[in-house]
Structure formats: structure tokens, C-alpha cells
Length: 267
Image (cartoon, rainbow, N blue to C red; front, side, top):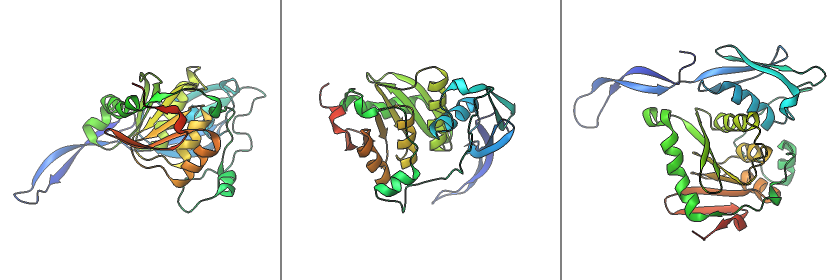
């Protein structure tokens, strides 16, 4: 199964009225990826295989464990589910690494809590002057869905899309984990020499958690938009850092939770 994004499974289709029948269904693959740094296990994340080197690079960068690619000699897949990162001599990646926490931002509130869990970005998104028309923002979910090949066949994946301010889709990634989809985009941008992502919009297909807002800040994205709701802590982080945060981006309406000066009514 390793290396593929979908798998076919026999299911029993049961209607409310009528006879049940067996049929084939396509499922999104979920498998573990272990990230090792200089031979030592760092973390394991459950992901959809594909773009794994970007995922490893993006994870390390957005977690503040990698300052730049100059610290890395090599990232390679040493088997289907292990990404091995080798530091350059004298440049230790993930030196004194911390324990990773999975957050939904539930039960954590207030500025003291933000300071306790934040990873500080080198980039000042508050200084980014980009503005994006609301009509253009409203068009982005449809453009991202058109790029979601695996979601179209399974309905089981999150997506992250990176757009320029004129609405051009420059990268789209899918994964069972919404944070992984963002890390895949982040790793691609980092390895492409595009970070910081000044003047870009990051769109996520689900909700905007604190974790995703923080990852957007780490790669220098000034606008984070989500099809669903943001968390309270994501909104507080956005307000504190100058990040524009848009939620419930569906149809012809949206909610702007922070950084409203970047969302314009101009066509």
C-alpha cells in the first residue's frame, strides 16, 4: 500500500429504503511517516503518502526546528515511511528538540497561553501591504477543489492551496491531516526558495486552528483563509501578529476575524 494515495475496499451500501448491495469504494490512504534527524527518531505523523520530503522539510521549518535549508545536507526517503534528515557539518537541525504537541486550541485561551505555545517567526507579516478583493477570495475554494484529485475520488482528504494575490494557484497539496497538507505546501515553498511568502494567500479546506495560523506566520504568509471556522486562539494569534484571518469562506460571504484592511471590495 505504501506510496499510493488511494486504496479500493469492498463495502456494503445500505439505503434507507431498498435492498443493500456490495460495491467497491475508494479510500484515502493513511500511513505513518517517521522523521529522523541525524539517525535519531524525531516524530511520527499520520499522513497520506506523497510529497514526503516536502512534508519533512515543512514540518521542521514551521515547528522552528530548521532555520533554513543551509542547515540540511540531505533529506531522503530511506524506506516508504521514513524520511531521513542529515544536518550539514556544524549545523545541527532540531538541536535540543522539544516534545511536539497536537493542539486544537480547545481549552487554551488568553495571551499568556499563546506565549506558552507559540513558535516565533522571523517574518513580520504585519508589514505586508498586500490587499485581496473579497470577490477573488470567494473564488478560491472552487479553484482549490478543482485541484483536489484524490478528494474528488474519495471525499476523505484535507487540502491546502497557496495562491498569489491575483488568484493564481501556485501549489496545492492533499492529506488526511490538515496540518500535513500545510506542511507539504510549506516544504515545497521552502525548497523552491519562495519563503517568505510575501503577498500570498494560504487557503485550507477545513477549519483554521491555532496550529495552522502559526504555520502561516512561520512561512511569512499574510493572509490565511479557511472554508470553515477558526478557533478563538487562532483569531487571537492573528490579531496579535498582523495576520489576516478569514473564515467561513463559502459562496458569496466570509467572516474576517483579523487584518480586515487587506480584504477590499474592489473587483
